[in-house]
Image (cartoon, one colour):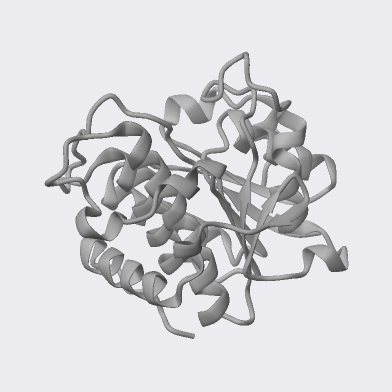
Length: 257
């Protein structure tokens, strides 16, 4: 059985993925933004291997999450599930970054670099990432008028590009990105067409299955089927430029191999 860490597992798709993996007999490490949210996990928490706490808007707390995970031990897989949708304004973290960028892009990048390398990495993206091209000119929204939908699309393109970059750099790690669809969660709303079990299925399968179809790397998935992502996400030049920018913004370097 695998040991799997899931960010943003206090509710929504992250909690559903955690429950699914626990039901399969895997060992799961949960993550909550705050102690209050961790306390509210109830039955799921009682069956988990552990829980780490930290707010992904904070670089210091994101580093602390990595430290807590590493103290538990090496993970077989990490599902980078945590994210925010549309923010009404740019906002600013303690480090001055746009909140959408910090949570959806900088945090998974930092955790990837700082957590002991697992055997599998799964990043939650969105079909909306196809509207996110051209972000490198103003990655942190310091010059452009704020556009919440565009910022979200860009952040989801970033994680697909990171996935493909890691598949090139880390050939011994299975790296995949997933579009779970528009799911009936707190974020997706009651009118979303995809039920939560369907929404969590692909990422849990990629994180733990021994099915030969799941033992691949550098792929973009939607409901257990591979799809073609945005062109920019598959461009090694864009991937390397993005990683260079993220390294400078966070002060965290990503190893080459």
